[in-house]
Length: 130
Image 1 (tube, helix red, strand yellow):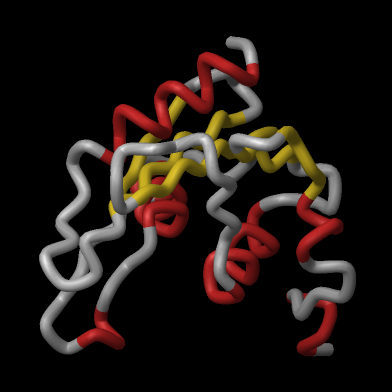
Image 2: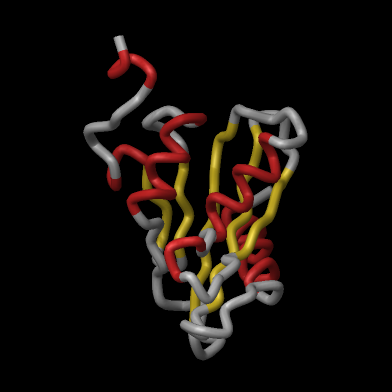
């Protein structure tokens, strides 16, 4: 799957967003190392702190199906169907991604691709607990 196709899957996932409060729809598509794709969307809640981001929805969906190794994630977000503006992952999503992905995870946004380490150069991980 190309970067463009993975980003297209993220845009498609945004259509399922439940965002009645922010009206900002986000979709994510994460590719496992075995090539499977898992998608997610943001799911808001009237108690704002209980909202779940698209990236975490995609990761949790994959983990719930036994997949814990990933090589790329695409993220698309928009409040007006213009998915050409980059939508970067929040800190909570970066932390969840760091649990399952190395620094080399490819993060695909509308303006190109990056590595997880570009967003989270110093991480808190299992090694931090020792």
